[in-house]
Image 1 (cartoon, rainbow, N blue to C red):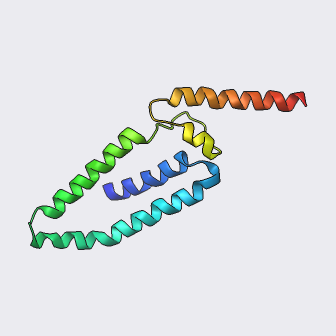
Image 2: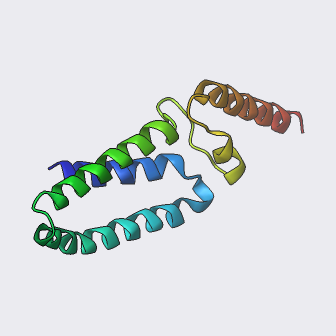
Image 3: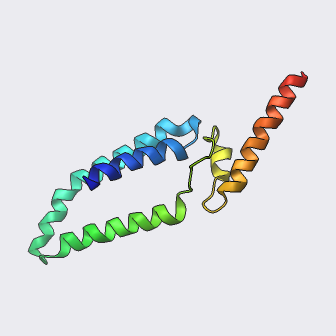
Length: 118
């Protein structure tokens, strides 16, 4: 159940973090990486011959490493507008989400005002 949840969350993050112009490529890379890792998992289980706890320890280390990477590097995208370009996505950094939201809404307001003036 947790593996399925993690898989769904990775798809959700990919859809929110990658900008529109490269979203399909980003989702493809994440899904391909997940499939390769899933294909290698049975070989990791054979490490019980070396030490009976080794596969469980490695799975735990990988999970903790993944959680730390998500916690420290993936920005919170709640209430954030989706990035449309790579430049916009590069400005979305963890801990500075509020500044990014203000900047994005400011850009949208400026664009709508300039389009009305022409």
